[in-house]
Every structure is written in C-alpha cells, then in structure tokens.
Image (tube, rainbow, N blue to C red; front, side, top):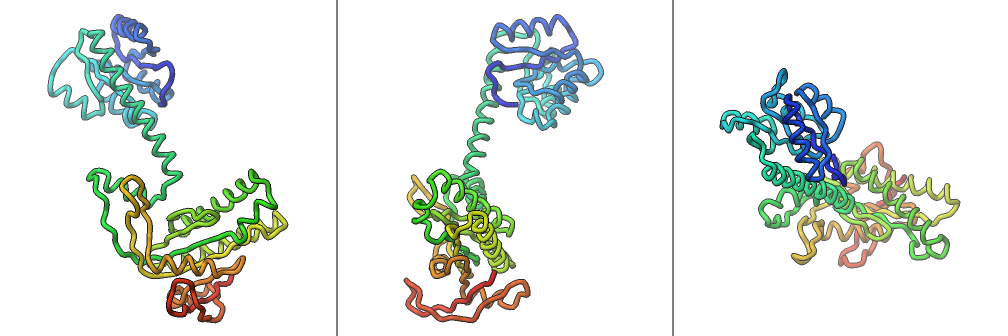
Length: 343
C-alpha cells in the first residue's frame, strides 16, 4: 500500500444496509469503497489488492472478524494497513482479542459519522507518515554506511552518542591515478558516469568480502574489514578492484582509470567525529593514516601493503607478495616496511 490521491477503504460486513451506510459516509468524506460480505471474501480481496484502510465487522458468518483480521494482518501488503473493528459490544475481552489479532482501533455500532471520519483520517495519516519515513530511510541508506545505520538505530532511543572504542581493523584505501587530468580527456557527464560505475563496483566488492565502506574519498574509497579473516578479505578485495580496473582500461582503450590501493592492519579508534550539528562515524588513528599513505605510494594498477598485513597473511596460498622494501612515509618519523601485493 502506498499513499494515493483517492484513498480506498475495504468495508467488511454481512449486512448490506450497514455496508451501504458506511459507503455513503465514506463517499461524503472523499473515500472510495470496496465491499465484502464475509471474512472469506475480505481475505481474498486483501490478498489481491492494496487498501488504505479496512473497516471490519466483528460478527461475521464463517470466518469471524478476529480471524479475518489475523489473516489479513500477516499479508505483506497489509502489515501496516489500518484495520478498524466495528462491533456492537463494548466488551473488554472482545477488544483484547481484536487488538491481539492486529487491529488498530475499534468503532462501536451504531456508527457515528463524526467518529468514523476522525478515527479513519487519523489512522490513514499515521500510515502515510510511516511510508514517508520509510522512503526517507531508504534514500538515506544510499548515503550512509550500514555500520553507521546500525549505530544510529542502536542509540536512537537514548539520544546519546556511543563512546569511541578501539578495534582491530584492516583498512583499504583506493585511488584513481591522475583523476584531475581526466576532465581534459572525457566529457564531464561521461566521466561522472564512468566514475560512478567504477566506484559502485568497488563498493560491491567490499561488501562481498564482508567489509563496509567508511567513506568516499573523491575518486576512491576508504573501506574497513573486521573479524578473524579481515586481512585476507581486504587483500582479495583489493586484487579484484585492480582486476576490474584493468577490464575498464581495456574497454576504454586507455589508462585513465588506473587504480592504486593501500592496505594496513592494526588498531583504530571508531567513533563520532565532528560537531553535534554534523557528525561523521568513522575510524581514525595511525592505522588509518598509514593505509592512506600506502595508497599514495602505490603505482598505477598496484597494491602496497604494510608489514602488519604481510605478517598476517604473507604465507596464504592465494596471495603473492613482492620483496620487502623499507621506505620513508610522510608523517611517520620511522621508516616503514612495505610489500607489493600481486594481482
């Protein structure tokens, strides 16, 4: 069910005169109406169509109103559809059964038009707000990492920010070499499309290898891998990213999408960074900084890894490393051991 210009209400009652009266009320309030004379008919209609609300008589022949409500409520297209039970008995036991079956409200017979209008409008409005929020959430999911989403959902109820914590992580940085010159060779629209496609594939690979994208870094990404196989997953992901870049280069017949990758393994602090008005939930620390620097050292279509990565997975049969080098790295006082990871 999605918000529509003309709301449609399913009326379920075995009395034709009651259905006619409710239909007239609804028509005067600007609703369309569909009628069902039994629970069986209502269940069949609900399974085939989407309704903005359902008015359901409690006393029905055959399948009663409670069981009808229960069966409609479990349908995927009516999980949040407002269901209002119409009953002549203001009995707590009956109402408890109705709410347990999934109804949202009740209306006592004889039906008062003012009450029907107010309660129906309120429930439909709440459902519309629910769908609007779901749509916003889906759109936000495209911009916010799953890890950040989980953090927000976990702490939304308290309104407090989680404290920063140290974690062992594998950090992968990717970068397209010479990106600033790409605009001189490719039209902006096509360049944007190519870059988007290329980065989208990198993101897919990160999630395939059980990581998550911490952020986009212009023409590359910063990805985090955790768990017992994080170093292996990060290395295999980097290899596949380079392989995909080579495929793009062959298709485009140039070297404009040559990629470099840097990988490091160690502890990082993960937490909220920024002001209360704008926060970034990210990993920071020397482990992250070195991974970024190694990405900067990587030649086009190459992967540079730290000594920590090599020590963790250097003997793995699926990985091939080049000889050790000891190099200066900007921002680090001591020389750094690095290795090349072959694709």
